[in-house]
Length: 123
Length: 112
Image 1 (tube, chains in turn cyan, red):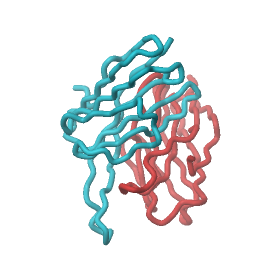
Image 2 (tube, helix red, strand yellow; image 1 turned 90 degrees about the vertical axis):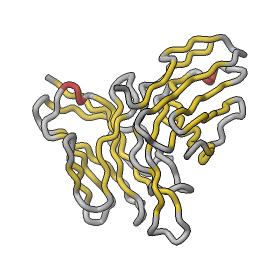
Image 3 (cartoon, helix red, strand yellow; image 1 turned 135 degrees about the vertical axis):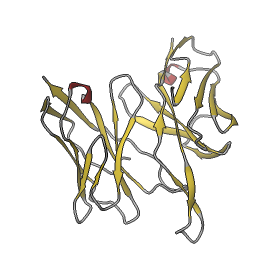
């Protein structure tokens, strides 16, 4: 059984189009992430959701809009695609648990499990 | 920016131990050392993590120096399938802190 799955695996599209990438995890995790890996192979966090709530947004253009309908899904919608959006997009998930050792209770992010990636090519 | 320094590439003979070093001289007290790897065209795969004690699991061993400024990932019997880019990451796994930041990693080539 695939733990973290993404669709589609490959996506080729024209500049200016709008496209969506879907991610699903069956691990029962409550936190999901989107990463982007560019042509130089640098892997960078884009977004993180905990219990359907946006937690991390790493200065990503607002053409990118993540949507989490439930804890098991985190979809990525991209408007007005640009050439520079060509990359591999990875979804990941993890548990988060309260850090009770911290006076201001924060969430501890457990180990992240990654999906197989979606290869986006914008022409 | 990644807070770790790794050699860009290493070779290892099949069946031998692969020792991958990582320097993290600015690591702070609540930061863990994580290791992930990425086999060509696949998503990153978690290997192991530790705070200050040495750790071992079914995939690898992690040796952290006493001052925590460096660590070594050991694959005890490397196989061709271990050929991948290995990432050493330091982070405090709490919300509000830096998320997983991947550097350039070490490209390990296991040779028959």
